[in-house]
Amino acid sequence: MKGGRVGRGRTLMSKMAIFLLCVGCFALGMLFTN
Image 1: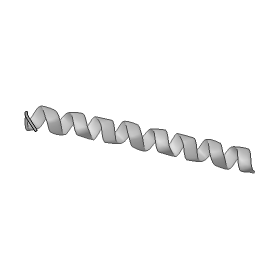
Image 2 (image 1 turned 30 degrees about the horizontal axis):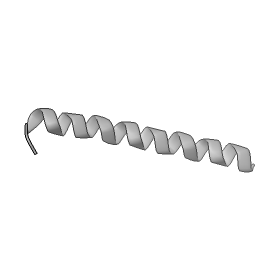
Image 3 (image 1 turned 180 degrees about the vertical axis):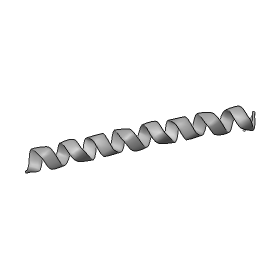
Image 4 (image 1 turned 90 degrees about the vertical axis):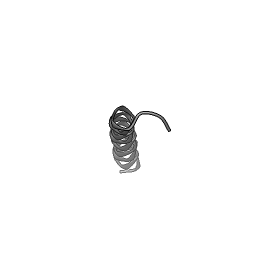
């Protein structure tokens, strides 16, 4: 793993993106099931 600060920032951004994507999919699933 290269780059301490830049790598950490990038992983944080990707984690946030994945989290938001999961939440969006979950919300859509709830909407369609209800």
